[in-house]
Image (tube, rainbow, N blue to C red):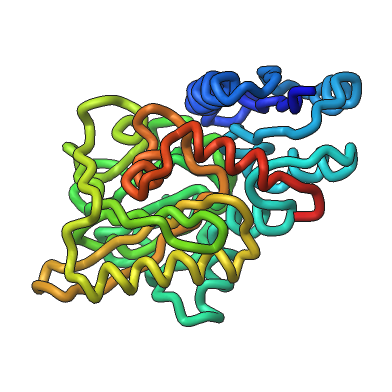
Length: 304
């Protein structure tokens, strides 16, 4: 009998549209691998839907809140349905950027200087010397990220709605290059450099064709390449991640090679869209998209 895989996608986070694209790609790949596949656009009754459906495995293609922060993982643990990617605790810790930075620090990973501030503190004046970066505490895909250069005519939050909480993470802006590493089963697959056509690798650049150049493998100093691979493995392990993750770094080589690496965050639900980096890195190592999702299904379990 074919194994029945329910692919969870959509949801109600700020990354809903990206999740739908990831989910559709996963559904197609699993069908080609001869699984019985059900696509579920996740809503607030997902627990009832899954309890009635009783799939053998849930492939988690959700991004952002509820899908990436331990919530859906807790639902699946309660239902006893094996699922892909990281478990409850690892997902929650990785999504909480300030907490993840504390864990990185315990194993010596180089973090960017910064802190958590209330929006009112930022509106009252710069909380650190510009340029600096403002990030929501627990969003992915660069949702809500702002770079303050000091040349703006107005402070952040003044002229637009902000839906990401009253506290934000503020970090020093690190010049240089964007390097990202995929880790599968505790082993780094490779490092890729992203060169966006705009100031930084934002939501639009990640999910719109033509907004970023992908360089695989990252054309950086060999010793630095080895270091960033090891750092990504360390981040994956200290957070207790499972399956596949992608860890993002800034590489400041403005004074020449070798430069200095800074860890930004670890994504426990890396994108599975046609423009996503993790499938591209895996393909460079000889693992095509179908093989990647098949591996993740076979790795699925509870109590992750």
